[in-house]
Image 1 (cartoon, rainbow, N blue to C red):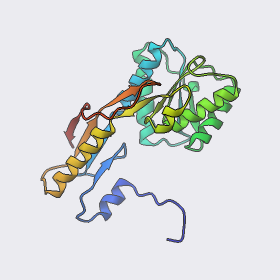
Image 2: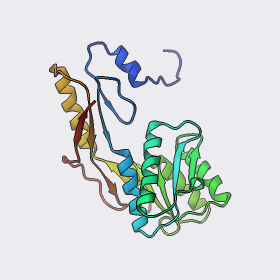
Image 3: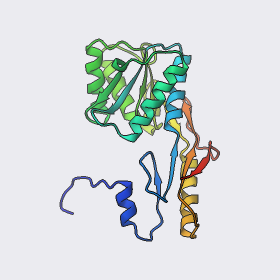
Length: 228
């Protein structure tokens, strides 16, 4: 192809084009009928991340990094869990503490969060949609004389390697990637072997990786399957 524009196919488009090739979907997109999907429980994980911040004594907990306008399913699930976590902690939901970003990278998050801080945003805890949003938030804070976790405790998402290299190390929601890969391969092998029946949605575990901990792959996660 001569164009350098990324080509994005929806799960439905992939399913319609795959022919007899076995496919297992990963993540939060809507799976096509009869297909298998493996993911973590984003709603529960976000709620637990808020509980972690609340346990640190944070009472004005914000959310950073969802899309401006129509939200992705990933953002919608994590925002739902964010609200659930606030409710469980006895904290009110305040839409003004949720900061969207125009561009879904660290620079976009830095710009959006910096503007919000300059406009008077006052929070002491922050759940970020992903670790890149958290990296942008930390830079915006540093440029304004704010430190984590002294002024704002920050939680990212995905536990990417870069997050562990920050000072202080970033606390992050860490999916059990080993369990995710194993579950996906199990479903794929069953499909290749001709397993009959409807597709299944499989949920694997996660944990809150507190800054400074070393991420150790684990074989055992919270694993559930539901036929749909």
